[in-house]
Image (cartoon, rainbow, N blue to C red; front, side, top):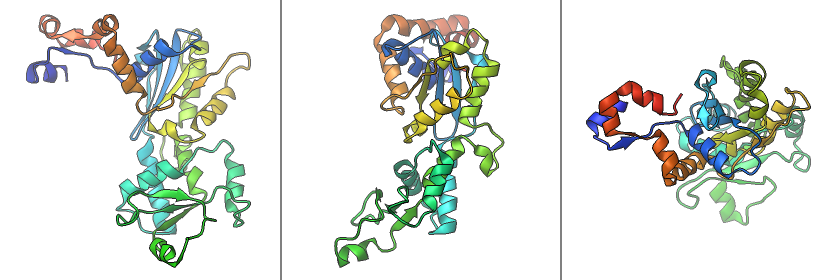
Length: 296
């Protein structure tokens, strides 16, 4: 890839890295609660989840983990369940991805929520919702609504007939795959299990307390309601009670890495530390780039 940029595109300089590096840079620059030079970045996106320990803002490559668990698995599972139970939506990936983003949440008490979702009494079942599908005439984007909400009139009832998905336990059983992908046959650790493995077994003992105290969640899956609390509860249960566990979820986890990159570019001294110019590439070659770039 370095040769492609320098020799084909003829760029004047190049910096190649992971989103976790930019996120850690912004976190270190702006966080007033930073307790250590170490941190742990959990980047859960559409196709993969990366769990990356950081030391002084640099990725500890030998301890990086990648899980084949992400939003795509959740969307496919929601499509499968909905097509089996209600309506064939196998060709509506985009709409069902929106449905997942709007209607799903991460449960912090799975069995209690499952018991609640079994009830047909809407005063007891506070989880049940209806997802109004777009018809691209009157409704251009699907939205979530309370099932107790009634159509305003006969015209509204006719308009909505056939364009509603009823969601109950799907709202939290689908995101549960982030933590237990083996439930649908994936031979992968879940996010919490993989983070626990790093924090309690794989990382050097001197790194663990700092990483536990600085866990940063980024990526689209971090926007699920309850995600931060679930990760915090799972990690808190596996570490000694005298060690602090702090999980940080930025207001916009999808853009956090990009914001970190913009912050790095605005600081010329830090930016030049990782930038490789064309002259340096021509003098030192590909291996020099790999030694300079903070990538896994």
